Image 1: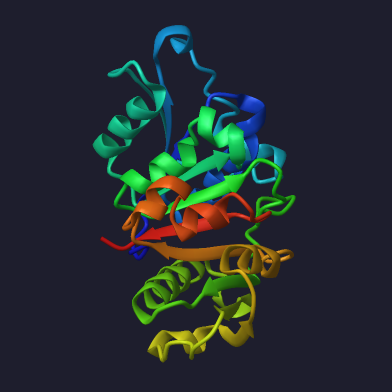
Image 2: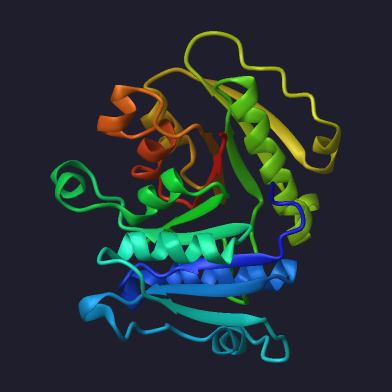
Length: 265
């Protein structure tokens, strides 16, 4: 659960130009909830001297918030030949409450021949992972303010929808933006949406929407213009998931907005 966020980890993806937007999201979130920020870098082979990116205090100054400070640590970790395994090992040592990572949203042959770090992290970590597409506008404004005014929560079954709703509420509460947030409880396909009565949901505006169509593409299309998608994931629980990815991973490759993946174990 995101309640009591004290440590946010930013998982460096290996290219500073690809990493600027997710790093900005990690900084803005850490500043909003007063959390420690740990930037995790893998030191393996040719990557012995990874660039730590722009320090948080420089980003805050660029936002016109130079008087603010963040407890920031840059962790360069070495343990494995594979950089993804190295980052995973480091994150398990840090034990953050939230991980932020970027993605290039590889599909088709690109995905077959190039491993997605974001997908590996979401599949192997027991904490929520905020995945920020490289080309997404995101929910951080020009002064580093958080715009979580429209949050999409897919409602397939009660357990996953409730887990996503719980984490979304905790996030907007701690960020201090609940009053301006609208949560869209989105059900795609046949059947009735699950009952999601929630005592804390009165703090945000709730909308319910039902759409027909392919679940993954319909969710991705519905998310256009939103601030954030929050989805629960059970990981890979079928052969199809092993081959094609979980619902959350498949939507992650399609959306043009950040996605918060919430693990259900």
